[in-house]
Image 1: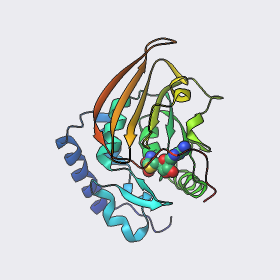
Image 2 (image 1 turned 180 degrees about the vertical axis):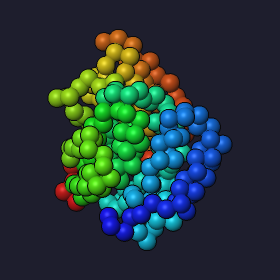
Image 3 (image 1 turned 90 degrees about the horizontal axis):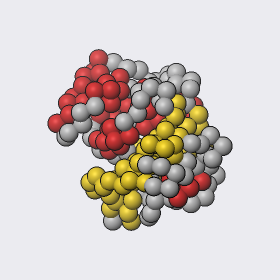
Length: 219
Ligand code: SAH
């Protein structure tokens, strides 16, 4: 990561991105501050640093993408993370979303099914100084029953339907944010666990994610 440097130019690009996120409707000040603070270009190959501050998804290998900044901001805002809450993220990918959650003061548990992505995200975030994030190379469909229940759960890949196992790992009043649908598009769902048996569901707009796949991959 020696070639990664933050500069006034990148800071300026981040400010512009934050303005764009505000214009698109993101209001949560803590989320906006996290975007202003985190050097998103550290999550890109050096040759593609220029792309880091555009409001676009970008390939990160293994057929996966770092989500569009607006999508990350939108999901994070819905999750309404408070300091010291436990958050399980499914789909570590580049690690950018995990860095946003950690910056908000959450205790982050992040799961990835591709071993190479898991390793590189873990290494990157360690070098960036995020000592508290816990990384797991596992199938996110199962969640992390050993650490459940969680205050919040965030899924960053598109599921065909809401996985029961994940709902059951929420605390009472806990929230799950998950895009649900098929390859043609998904609806963002915000699920709140009202009590042991009951969940409240809200639908919040259309998105497009890479698929939530079963099992792990050694690649
Ligand atoms: N949050 C990421 C976005 C990654 S895209 C970021 O900030 O960069 C979605 C990720 O979900 C991909 O890396 C994909 O490999 C992962 N994924 C898909 N199905 C999964 C599963 N069953 N368990 C864990 N991760 C999964």
